[in-house]
Every structure is written in structure tokens, then in C-alpha cells.
Length: 431
Image 1: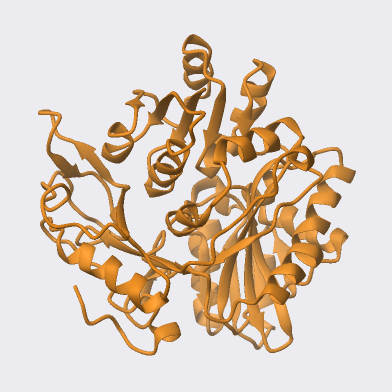
Image 2: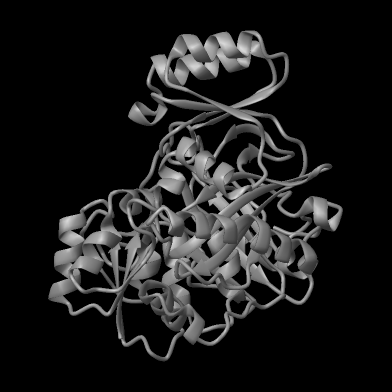
């Protein structure tokens, strides 16, 4: 089979890495891909938002399956176009992808499905939003309604913070049209967890969970990022909690979307907070998370091609049951100096190929590209690499991830040293 992965981040490299381990894959393409996917197949010079170009390339190359990584092409209807052209596509339709592209839509679906979440209000006017927070004496979370590259969420401890977040989103258009409408939610307390499952619009596979560390600084301080690290399974995760989330949170949403005539197919991402009152949904996303994918792809025991094809064709019930390993994995993300603000790119990355590598570790490329010589790798983004360790114990997985990170260098490289510290009891001492 010929498989095309759409996207250019660490998530897409992890997906491509796992897909090429399937015996059914004969050729892999990535659009546009990165230096990591270039080592696994052929990168195509197409932006992941070039819907026409991707459909044409898939037809020209007789692609048998397209796996869409990022949310933006899903929200643009890429899977609709591919399916219409007769090409199986792993990912939801444009209508179903509104579960992520519109937070107000997602809340309406959750309400109809009876899924617990924080109290919330939706505002389309600045004055209405400002008036609400002036008379609401509790911490809130202000969210841009649309897609904002993971940066449209503001944790507001007081009225001043909330006022700033509302004006920034709705008046100053910090997130463009995505912030014209905002959703204001109660601030919840508790550990967060990302839960993922495969679905064909009717069936839902067993789920897998991982954490995500959003803040740039150790101890969870500083601005939000796209993700500084991840590990799974979380130390508080249980089989009972997994089945509760699957049965009471994710399946009801899948059934509600089907009832509305917009069946959801692909990877379903449920972002939870485990509060003292029980788990509550913070958000649903329409794809695998990043950097969580770099943790869960090594845990996927099933053939990814078989599973993804079954999802895209509505035949998950006929496929072999999806199986996940319970071996812990941890990802440590290396970023450019200045990220998530202004940063420079084009710096050589050393230590990727030379050295004595631990076979229980792997490096997934994200903001990295091949130099013109075709051999050396240069930084090309804020989040550059994810170093992943896999082991029988979480502490050993952490040591492998940090040891691998310590062997890699580029100008201005930075990574947090406390990924998984709350589960293990201390920050990393290696790396």
C-alpha cells in the first residue's frame, strides 16, 4: 500500500514512523513532512493546507490511504475531498471536525450528549463578555472559539486577567477571526489527561491516555506552548477511569454527532481534568495530540494501517481489536531559544546520527529540515525535536528520554527537566 501522511510536525513523524512498521506499507509520502519523514519516504512540496494539491498528488501517486495529522486541513474539509475522489482518508469530515474548530459547537454537542464539563457562556460581543466577568467573582478560562494553533486559551485568575484576555481576543484580534467569539468557562482544578481512541463513527476502540506539559517553564510557569513534553500512561490512570471516559464521555459524543448526520471518523481526542467532583471534559479535538502522539504511537500494538483503513471505511467492528501496550513512554521536547515568542532558525543540529544510542529511545523531528546538502539537519521551528524513551518502568523511560536529549545539541536548545516529576517524585538527574 501507498500511504500519504499530511503535516510537518513531530506528530506526523511519529505517525509515519509507526505506519512504516506495518508490513502492508510499500511506499510512504509526507506533505510537506520534515527531516524525519524524509528518512522514511518521500516529502512532497505541498503545504498541509493545499487541499487541491494534496488531492491531486494522492491521485497521481495512486495513494491507498491518507492520514491527516493537523486540525487545520481537517477543518478545511480535506477528508471530504479525498473521500469524494475515492481515496480513503483517516480523519473526520469538515462538519465533524467542528468539534475542534468551534468550541461553542463542541459545548452544544456535549450538552446534548450529557457529557460533564465546566459551566460556560458563549459571547459574540466584547461588551457582553466584559460585563459577565465584571460580575462573576471566580477565576475563569477565556477561549477563542476557533482554531488558534493551541494558543487561544487564557487562564484568568482575576477580573483584570479576564478583561485583558477578552480584549486581546475580540478587539485586538490576537487570534484573527478565531477569536471573534469567545467561550468563558469556570476554572477547574485537578490533573489533566489527554485520552485518545479510534472510531469509525459507530464503534470506538479501547482508549489510551497521556499527559501534556503546556507551560514553557519548569514547575508549570510561563506562557503556554504547543507542548513541552508528555508521558503515558499517567500515574493516576486506571482501567476503571479509562472505561468511564470511553463509555460516558467519548461514545455519547460519537452517537450525538451520528444523530446529527455528521458521523465522526478518525482519532478522537478527549481532554479531561480529573477534579474532586469527578472527571470533566475541557475539550474535544479532532486528531491526535502533539506531543502525546510521540508517546502513544510506540504503545500501539495493532497494525496502524488496518485500524486507520477500518475507521475511514466504517468497518472498525470487522477489524482485529485495537490493542495498546502498557509499557510507559516519555517524550521530552527540545525547543528553540525564545520559543514560544520570537526565535531564530537555521542552526545545525548535532548528535542525531552519531553516538551510542539506547535502543529504547527514538527521536521524532518537528521543526527540523534537511540542509541543502541533503545530509545535515537544521532547526526550522520553535519545537524542534522530541526525545522519547520507552521502558518497563516510567523512571527508566524518563532516563532514556533525557539521556537522548543530552546527546543532541543546537544553538539555543532548551528543554524542561521536570517532565513526569510528579509521577516519579523528582526532576530528571540525567541529561
